[in-house]
Image 1 (tube, rainbow, N blue to C red):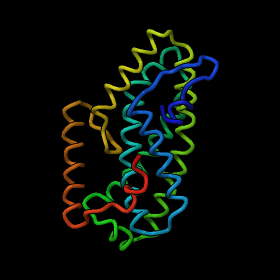
Image 2 (spheres, helix red, strand yellow; image 1 turned 90 degrees about the horizontal axis):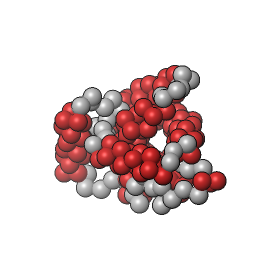
Image 3 (cartoon, helix red, strand yellow; image 1 turned 45 degrees about the vertical axis):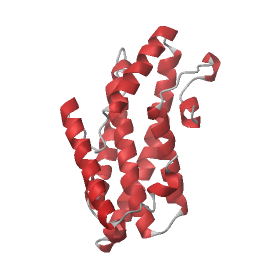
Amino acid sequence: MTQAGRNAYPEDRGSEVDFGPFSEDRARIDRITSRLDETSDPSERADLGSELVRSISRYEDTFERAVLPRLYEGRSDLAKQNEDRDELRRAMDEIHQRTTGIDPRNVHTSDGEGFEATLHAVVEKVRALLPVQDQETAALIGSLSATEQQLLVKDVVHAFKSASERPYPPHTGVGRFISNARVKLDHTLEDVATPHHPGADTVNG
């Protein structure tokens, strides 16, 4: 199990629950943001920005469909988190629009400072939001029986399989499938001219 997966569970329960790819994407987000702290190369930063948006989008779509509904049971204080997610998605959508179908080497050509400001905002917002969601998930798991934990894991894994890679996910499974197919096509077309990804290659794990 990844470190991010372990961090999502209360130690006093000694839980061995693993969310699989969902936990792996959580760890990948941390790797990307850490790499962004280290590199100043424009092409790598553009590629990392694109990868960060895809990973966060999958993570948040899964969280909202599989975890959040359970948190709403008896809760009335999650409005601030919803607002934070909306702000994060607005910033991510700008990065998505700036990087889709574009060679990473060309992303900074037009308004590089604006791109960097938005990317910085995405990193700050996700670093503020995800630890809160980690705590919410830990508290939820701590309140569940072993059987209920298994059901939660099943729902999370199922939701992640169809999670959207766009900041604003479609509302249906078919819509998410078509949307993800377009994202993959965009990246395939990019690879015709740019067969390497200077950012993704450093954080895949």
